[in-house]
Image (spheres, rainbow, N blue to C red):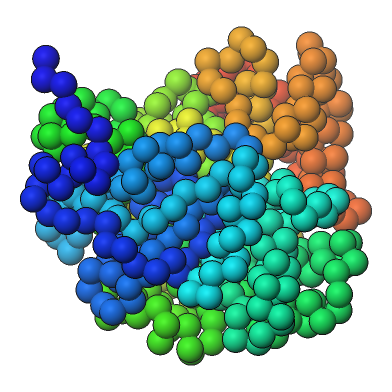
Length: 494
C-alpha cells in the first residue's frame, strides 16, 4: 500500500511545484478553529490574498479547553484542504483549495503569554470568531492577567485590555470585531457582555470608553453548509491528492456573509473585489430567512434523525416521513411567523434550502449538527414557536413536536444511548436529573418543560401552560411508542 505524506509546507511544494504560505503580516485574530470558520472565514481571507491586495494572515486561537485542532494546524504549518462541492448557478462545482491563510495556531490554555503577544501586534485589526451559539454568553469569572479566561467574551476583554495598555490607549489601535456565531445581534450581545465583564473586573473607565469608541462590534449573518471532515471517503480522496490531511474540510460552494457595520470596514475588507458574496447591509431579513428556514430545520433534523438512527442531512431528506415533516413545518408554521417581506421571499428560499440539503456530494452528519442543540433550539426554533402561539392563540403542532423531539434527544444523556449528547454541562446535568425519574407523570413532564421555557427561553413569568402541556403530551407519546410511530401520527394528522 502506498504510504502518503502528511500535508505540510514541504510536501505540498514537492507534490505540486507550487509555493504556498506566503509570509503575510498577521492582520486577523480568530477565536474558534472548527470546520465552519475554517471553511468560511479562513477561505475568504485566502481568497482576499489571492485576488486583492489585502495581504494578511490569521492567528487561530482555540476557543475551549476541549479543542483538539491546534496541534494538527501546527503540524501542517497552518495548511488545510477545502473541497467545495455541489451545484452553483446550474453548474456542478468540484474545487480543491489548499488554504494557506493561517500563520499561527495557539492554545491559550497552555500558552496565554503567546496569545497576549498577538494583542501587541500593530497590524492585527480584525477579530473573527465562531464559538457556536453557546459561546456568546455571560459567565462570571475572576480576572487573572497571566491566565486565559475560560469564556470567549472574557478572552476578548482580556486581550483588548492588554492591547489598550500596550498602545497606551491609542484610538487607532482598536479592533474590528466580527463574530460569526448564529445568534441575533451577535455583535451587540458580545459587546454588552464584554462591558459587563470589564465592570466585574473593575477595569478603568478609560479602557471601557476605549472599547466603546475605538473598537467596532459588527452584527453579522453567515450562511454556508460546512459538514467538515469526509470520513467515509477520506482514503480515496487522499489517494487523489497524493497526501493526507487530517484537517480536510468539505463545504458547499454557496456562501453568504452579511456584515452590518460602518462603511470603512468594506474598504478594509474588499470581499466583493474578490468575487465573494458578502453584503454590507442590515441583516434582519437575511437573518429571518436563514435562521428560520435553514438552521431551524437542521436542528429539527438532528434531534428527529438521531432518534431514528439516521446519520446525515441528505439521508434524512431522503426519508419520506422526515422530509414531509420538515417541509410542512417550514411552509405551514414557520413561514407564517415571518414579516410580509419575509413571507414573499420564503418560498423560493425554501426550495433553495431543500436543494442544498439534498446535495449528493455533502455528507453532513447529524451528530455534528447536534452540538449545543439546546442553545440552537432557543435561537433557531423557539422564536417561531412563541410568535406563532402569541399571534394565533394556540400552539403550532409541528413545532411543538420538534420541541418534544429535542427533549427526547436529551434522554441520550443516559449511557445506553446510541449517540453522544454534546452540550453545555449545565444543560446535561439538568436533563440527567430529570431523566433519572423512570416514569414521570404528564404533570411532572409539563412542569419540567415549563421550567425550561421560563428559566432559559423566555426568562419571564409569562403563562406558558398551554405550550408546556402540549409539548409534554408529545414527549410522553414519543417515549411510549418511539419516534417513528409518533412522527407517523403527526404526518397522518391523527
